[in-house]
Length: 256
Image 1 (cartoon, rainbow, N blue to C red):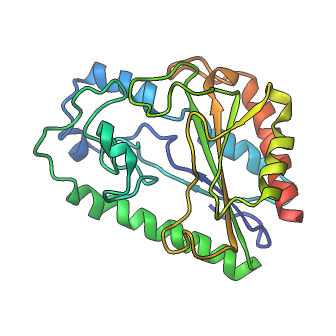
Image 2: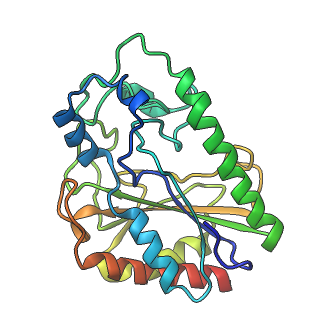
Image 3: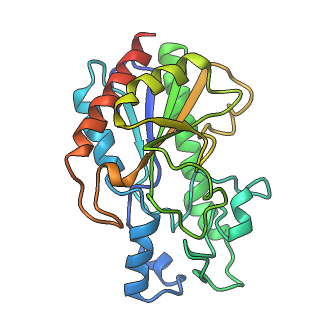
């Protein structure tokens, strides 16, 4: 979704949707009640709304890239191969296990049709969006917008670490100190920020990953009890305060 022509900032919202196409639903082993419960746990609820509020509050509107399908279809932020550590719990690019490590898809399910239909086109479109910001402004700043539960779920590989109100995920190549410092300042009023716990890293298209320093990136993981009723419930007044903070960060990055 377009923003201001001169904005280098791209808000990436990959996990906000609960939509599962019928042909994909047929390959999921959960009954309808169990599927709704899993969507409550796995969806970063209201993060698309957070990005929309941020867009409205910014002096220079950021661009937005919002996934319209649930991450139970494909997870566009995973590596599509053996580099992905979440394969250890059945949560690579195509999930085979749930947040509680129960069977989601049959053991013999072939991930390739879903990768071909959804994952690879998504990656190409996100790459094009980043290239568009590079062409227009000479740089691209990817802000990955996520949320996470207040209590660790069984699938989490790093769930025993700190769970700050706002977790900032960084990359050694793509997250410069100035970007991190601005984010820490923007979210200082929510009870503290932490780094890379419980979720580390950030998203950069593979074309640019580890190669192009004009592409900077940061993941913002917001603990859900700050703004919503868990799991999967309505948003509360905290969402507007978070949008104001994120808008302040976006404007600071645009002016930098």
